[in-house]
Length: 144
Image (tube, rainbow, N blue to C red; front, side):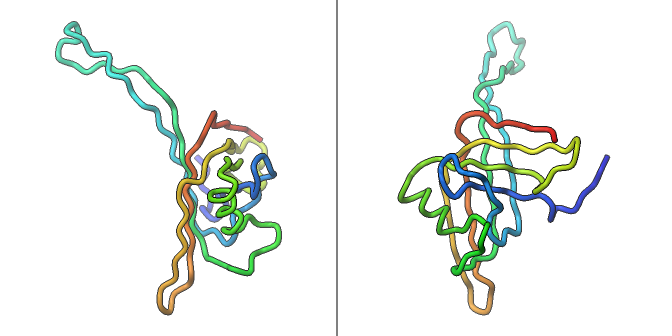
């Protein structure tokens, strides 16, 4: 089993629908959550046991990082996420994995709707942002 530094795991998001996904600005953490709903098919023949089958699949992504109102060339900035979320109200494309995967390493990609964005700054603290994306359509796994 290979262990790697979590710093190498990134979330890339397109600054426009269908655009090229690029790294989120100054990100510190990112996560991908994959779920499958269940459908209860228990009957009187189940002998008191619960029987399930798989239902709809869903996924969501989240990330947070340090806020920079000046922006960083080449990175997706929070103001671009804001534009997709509030003004355009369209899905973003994303990639989750290594920035440049080596042979055999895998990544995930798809599209989703930005459902949450928060920016904050405490006294004598670095300003931060967080973003949540709910997946729409299929989540694709790609092996390099």
